Length: 144
Image (cartoon, helix red, strand yellow):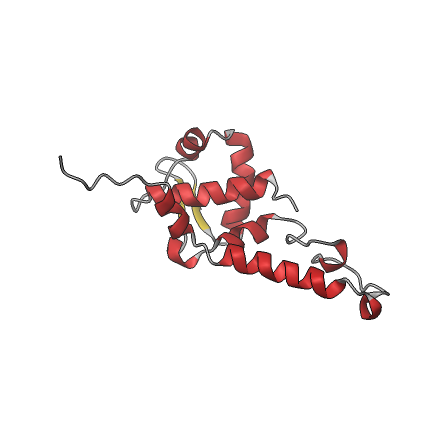
């Protein structure tokens, strides 16, 4: 299983916005520069996140993007599963558009694949965007 570039970038963007939220829209150009992602590609990633209501987008002067809800309420699974066309299915028969498999009732490996998908979902669901944003912040709370 490989997470696509789109999925990884979407996660990076969400973390970036959480780290830089200040109540104002953050311009696309700033996000692209910080994350070293082309603006053109980043637009396609942001479009999906806005469409699915993870982000608010505003065009024009003073426009940009901001989180639509608290970073503590968005998990890595929310973002990754949204951007992956196969929903991170380990095997094609478990994908979101899979047709019923004629071997489903007799498949000895199906329970293993289902359990694997559950483990992946649980793993990514335990990390919020807030958690990931805190990982990237350096703290300088010591006194010399």
